[in-house]
Amino acid sequence: MGAKLQALRHLQDIELQLADIRRQLRRKQKMVSAQAAKLESARQALETERNEIKRTQASVDELDLDIKGRTGKINRLREHLNTVRTNREYAAVLAELNNEKADVSRLESRALQMMERVEARTKDFREHQEVERREAERLDQLTAQFEQADRSFAERRAGLEQGRAEAAGQLEPKVLKLFDRVSVRYEGEVMAKVVRTRPGRDEFICEGCYMSLAAERVNALMIRDEVLTCANCGRILCLEQ
Ligand SMILES: [Zn+2]
Image 1: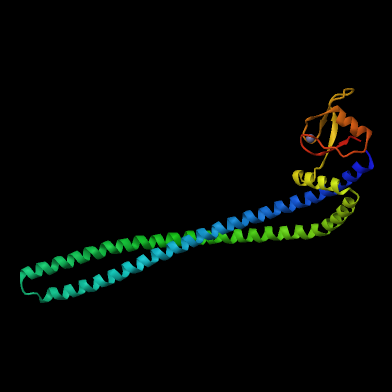
Image 2: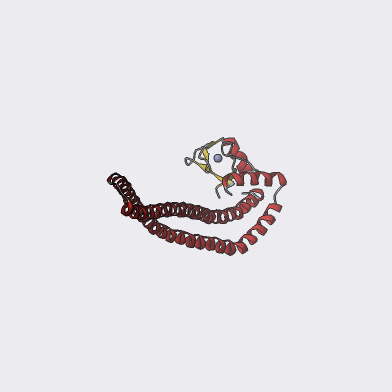
C-alpha cells in the first residue's frame, strides 16, 4: 500500500474510534430520552388520576350537601306532621316525608359508592406515585451514567480529534473531502479491502458491499498508489496487506 492510502488508512483508524465513542454516547443518550418519556407519561397518568379523584370527591361533597338539605326538610315535615288538623293533610305531608326519606336513602347509597371509588382510586394513586418515584430515580441514574461516560471519553476524544486533524492535514483537500463524505455515510468505515474470490483467478469483490470489481480497476490499484472508489458503495478501495 502506498503512502497516500496509508495516510487514508491511518485517518480511518482514528475516525473509527471516534465513531465508536459517538455511538456509545448516542446509545446512552437514547436511553436517557426513552426514560424521560416514560417518566413523563407516568406523570401524566398521575395527573389524570389526581383530577379524577378531585372530581369524584367534589361530587360526594355535592351529594352530602343535598342530603343535608333534604334531612332538614324531613325534620321540618316531621314537625309539621304534629300540627296538621285533617287526615287528608296528614296523608299528604306523610307522603312527602316518605318521598324525601326514599330520596335521601338513594342519595346516601350513591354517596357511599362514590366514597368507595375515591378510596380505591386514592390507593391506586399512591401506588402510581411510587412508580413515578422509581422512574424518576432511574432517569437520574441514566443521566448520571451518560454524563460520566461523556466525561470519561472527553480526554480520549480530544486526543483523537487532534490526531485526526494532523492526519487530515496530510491529505489533499479533494481526497479529504471524499473521505469525509464516505465517513458520514458509513460511520467511519471509509476503506474497503479488495478481496480475490478464488485463488489464481482475477476475480475481485469489494469487502464493503460484496459486489464484484472490474479487474482493470484492481490492476490500477496494484500498480499505482491511487485513490479509487467502489462503483457500487463508494468506499475507498485498498488492497489486502
Ligand atoms: Zn463496495
